[in-house]
Length: 287
Image (cartoon, rainbow, N blue to C red; front, side):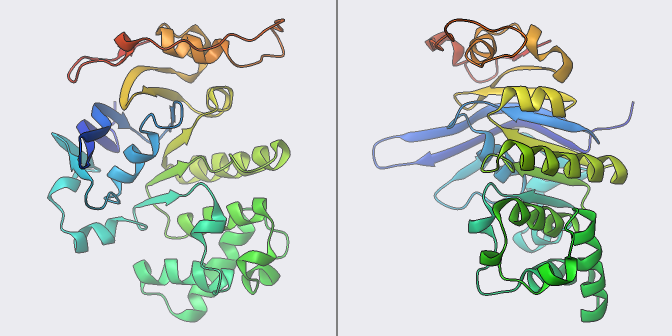
């Protein structure tokens, strides 16, 4: 069995405030190989904070602690900010939720992707443009030359998301963190974007952390699923076994979703219990 690409042990993220300390992530442990791992849960469950922690994107007053955070044999906790910049965007990339807030509105699409490539590769302007056009074609943009010279406001939401995927994949990273990359898209475009990500991840042998709140989507797209609640991992399982999950929180989430194969008169309402907030150090259920 090959070693995991990413190993995280005892990760916690805290935000001190005037009256108390907010624990966004509480002592979680997980690993990601060269596979598609879905991280799901409600808003505020700690999914995005987990992804940002891996990349070192939690800024003060946020405090990140962990017993171990290893990426391909590299101790991420021991790296300086300069060393982390060599990893970030090069070997680990992150696709943010909404391209409208991630793309620079005063730079053309092509120049932004060029910059992402040249910073890490040292390539010439000519080589960077060729590589950018190649990536725009890889994410199935029909007229790469036109999009290369366009500004972000001149492209649709679906195309903007494809551009972000191209930008994050142009350095050929080993791990891609996708933070709800399809939540703002309609169903047809959503499926197209997921098909692109699936093809690129499979072809390049990458690892993928797919952050989402859509359990049905994750079940059909990922290999494994990590379910988070209240900043902790309550259950992990194979994606194919998600509908047989055991934890009451996971069961409640599934019951609140409509299913074509099992229509019901009225969907269930999720009733939360204090006991679901596991104490730090308690192992999550593994199916």
